Image (cartoon, rainbow, N blue to C red):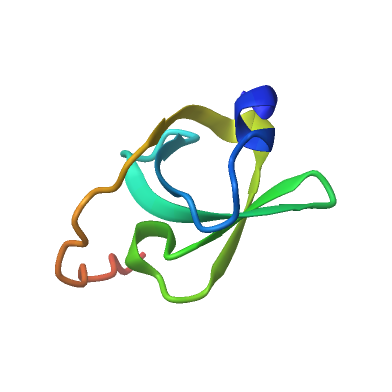
Length: 74
């Protein structure tokens, strides 16, 4: 997984399945302190930092952004 990620250029559109979450689209931005930096992760406008070991699947491409989801209240 890490070898594949190191070959990506910043700005590459990917679909990622992280931990036990459903696949989501994101834009790869790079690495920092052993974390993958993504923007537009699941249509979120900020940056996300993910632990490489929690990534299960990555593919090149994108998914359409769904309308904003309602947050579940716990």
